[in-house]
Image 1 (cartoon, rainbow, N blue to C red):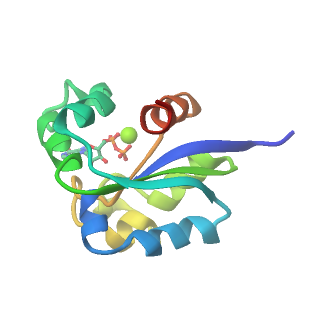
Image 2 (image 1 turned 180 degrees about the horizontal axis):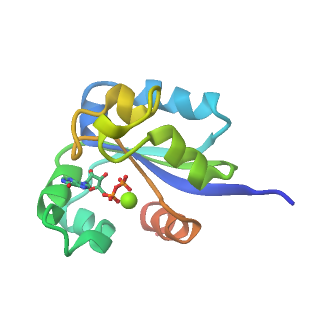
Image 3 (image 1 turned 90 degrees about the vertical axis):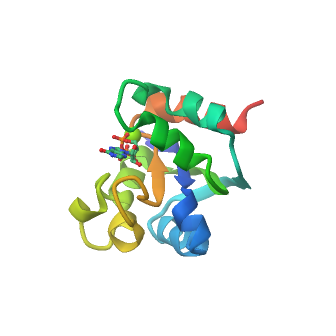
Length: 136
Ligand code: IDP
Ligand code: MG
């Protein structure tokens, strides 16, 4: 049975600003994730609040929404075997300090908030998040 899946990846403002887009994309490609779609956009704080609404009760919610809307981001659909888990493994732990060697967040993350990338955490959320950015 094929387990080819799609997931949503976002290169966050801290990484776009430091010109890390191609480096991060190369990590996906080298690890058998195909970039099916990619676009550089900037979203409003309201759109960020909608995207991150699962976190609305968290103390860092307002800061998180301000941050994601603070500059250009690159949103991508990644496709491959077990894409959701594969992408999460390549990203590393939420806090770059806890991330394993050679993960994107270990290599490039600055702090728990400026952690360079977002990735869907389940197939169900991947579908919703792809819809959010790519279906009108
Ligand atoms: P994830 O991005 O690894 O899935 P989540 O727990 O879903 O992590 O949190 C979403 C985002 O919220 C994180 O990527 C990070 O940018 C931010 N975040 C998570 N925990 C904290 C925190 O304790 N302080 C500030 N920002 C946080
Ligand atoms: Mg998450």
